[in-house]
Each structure stands twice: as C-alpha cells, then as structure tokens.
Image 1 (cartoon, rainbow, N blue to C red):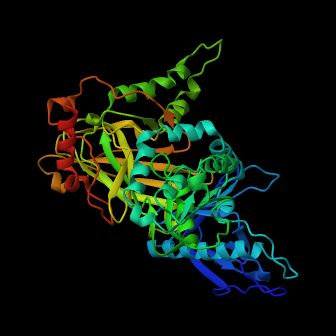
Image 2 (image 1 turned 60 degrees about the vertical axis):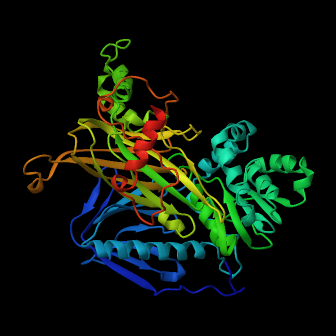
Image 3 (image 1 turned 135 degrees about the vertical axis):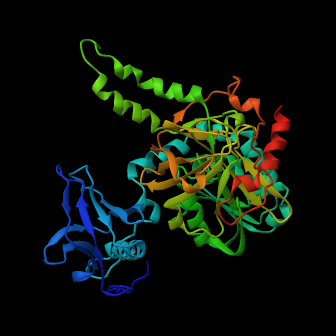
Length: 538
C-alpha cells in the first residue's frame, strides 16, 4: 500500500452507504434476537474508521455494529445473507447477523458495497495516527486462519508428502509431458513456479529451456527444493528459489509463464487456486501463459447401495440403549447426520453413474479471485435407468493449453487413478427415479477460513410420465458437507453387479473435449465419449 508520510489516505468512495432491510436476526446470543421492524444497514467512515452499523429506521440507536476488518458476508439465498464477525482473543465464539433484503438487486448491491468498505477498513488498519505505515497483512493472512495455515505449511514442508505427490505418475507424468511437448512456450522465457514444493516443476521448466525460473514456496520445503535443484547443476544456474507466499514476495521481473499444481480435492480444496490467480495478477506479463490454463468440475448422480448402507451403519453404535448402563440413543440422529456430512473420497466404478455428467468451467486466465469465494453450479440431468439415487459424484480435470499440444490431466472414474481420486456427496435421503426422469438441483460451494469449502447440495426429481408438463417437484433431498473433513474410503471399484449393467453402460471420458466458457450440459457434450470409454473397459 502506498501512502504519503504524515498524511492519511482518503476513502476512495463516498463517506456513507445506506441500505433499507426487511429485518435482521442476531445468531450469537443464547436467545436469538430478531428485529421485525424495518432496519437500516449503514456503511460509514466516522472518525476515519470504516464500519457497518445496523439501526432501526425509527430510532438512532444501533441494533448491532460489525467490525469490517474481521467480518465476512455469505449469501444464503436470493434475499438472505449472513454477516459473521470473528470473536476477540478473549472469546472463542463468533457473532452472526442474519440479514433479509427487499429484493435480489438490493442484496447484490449490499454485497458489492460490503467488499468495497471491507477493503478500505483493512487498508486503514495498516496506518498509524502519525502517518507512518504498518506492514500490511497480505490477502492470504487476512482470509485464512493462522492455525490452518500453520498445519498446511507444516504438511507440505515434509518430504513424505511430497513423495506421495511425486509418485502419482499420472500427475507428474502429465505435467512433464505438457511442458516438454510445448518447449516452444518455455525456451528463453521467464517462468514462475507458484507453490513450488520440491521444485520438480521448476526443473521441468528448466529442462524445456526456460531462461530463468523463480520457484516460490512458502513452507520449509523451500530448503529441500534448493538442495534438490543444486544437485542438478546443469539446471540450477537458471532456477532461483524464493521462500515466501506469492501474496507477499517480490520478483525482479515479469513472467512469461506461470506453472503450478494448485488443485485440491474437488479442484478447489485448500484454496490454492486463489493464490494461483493472485500470482497471475502480480507476476504474469501481458499475453503470458498459465500451466494449467483451465479447470473443470464434472458432476453426475450415482447409485451405490453398498456405500449408502456403509455410511448409515456407522451411526448404529449410537443406537445402543445400555452402553455400560448409558443410553446412547439421544445422539443417534446427530451422529447419523454427521457421517453424511463427510464427502466420500475414493475410486469408484463409473457404471455407478446414472446420467451423463454436467461440468462447470473455471478459466484460470480470467477468473477473479473473489469469484472463487462462492461457486454456484446448477444441476440438470436425465436419468438413464430407473434406480435409487444416493447422491452426486464429482471429479475434475485441467487443461495445459500449450501452443503446440493441448494436454489434459483428468481424475475421472475409469481413468488411471490419481492421488486426488474422486469425490461423492451422499444424500441421507435417496431419491427414486425412472429412466428418462429429469433430476435438477444445485451444488453451492462457500469458502471458509480453514482453507476449504462448505458444500450445500440439493437434488430434486421432477414428476415423470403423463401430465409431467403441468407438475412440479416430486422429491427433494439436500445436505451440507465439509470438504475439509472427508471420509477417505481408499477401496478399488466394486465388482458387484448393478441394475445399470442390464442396460447400456454410459461411462466417463472427459479427455480432449471442447472447451466451453460456461456450464456444460453433459447430455449434449459427452454421450459419445461415455460410449467410447464403456467399450474400452468391457
């Protein structure tokens, strides 16, 4: 942040923004406190301090005041949001305020104003009253819990975890091929390796003829990377290891290419995609390339009775009425829902899928960092068989859009297994569908400060058969899951027979498919690819 010594920066927007609300409810009190009378939300900069205040329209007294430097705003629906403030050091809890808007347009305007004023509040926090400037916290430190960041960098600072990724030969081999097949993009170019880890991608870039590579790594793995790189002297003279976060380090020149492996489970877990985008904005020159270039999340409904029973049976422990004289049944319902709040990570047989997939595209070259805070994906499928739907199966792929070769790295079911596997969200209440029946819903992913996402899944089956055009939703099931706390079920695909085997078996192949700039309808995109992969696996 730039500031003149002895002079404070002035707000870059007007001194006050005001919004009329339908109502607010405080969620942190032992008894929820609500205000049904009209309320005003006011962003102001009184005494040089940016803050958000909620007041009754008829009174001047505050209902509640939110500290914008520690508050976050999440959208719960078109007309409802929640503002959450972190607790102080003395108190471990957070305070939440549920907000209801009069219209969707006012909700959108409020969210936009919140982000502007929050940015100003954070900037103000870095200034002292005498005009000198404090060292500002970078974006990573502002949005990520310190405890989560400490565990994250400790994990990736250990060689055993780097070895686990290096031994994923699908992953490492695809990166090597993408770089070597596109030497023309690397020869004589400046490369920045974002989150370099062991430095393997930096070494690949140097092998491809890069003029210089800056390997940026925030964990203690940076020291191992230096050691590994120095042990390859023919490449080491063109690689510089920079220890620090991409949000805070400074580099002496712009990059022609960014290379990184920012993908987590379901593509977005660990929130490293945001750092990849920040590195793009800070370091990549005009017309620069990004390896990978785009990512896609693929989703399809699945039927797996064995998995459903396995998850449900975990809670049977809590049905004991005489556990050393104690009745455990009061906690059975909570335990049951708790197990279904865990996404299942494993490799499954693609014949479990009951409809062609739909896909959501994330273009790393153009997406804004803030767009990754909340991702909403509409769902629409046509069931290919009559069965019980137990949830939504998800996987991802990324494209290396080189000048010479376009190469995909996929984690699809039926493809060679990677350390990412696939992910399934299991519904506690399955849906019954007939062949040809339409399935709709939404997958909403909301980022949280523990470097992951909360997943909100809703799936509905529409009426089917005569009169369906006049009918509405027949069944609906929903769940909330924490991507940070998955159930790692590292079993191989099950060989048991399924109802789908009696019909045609549409399977998955997401390789070399056309790039779309919006959500892709799998029924239009991948039917031929499914049939091709089915023939390969039979």
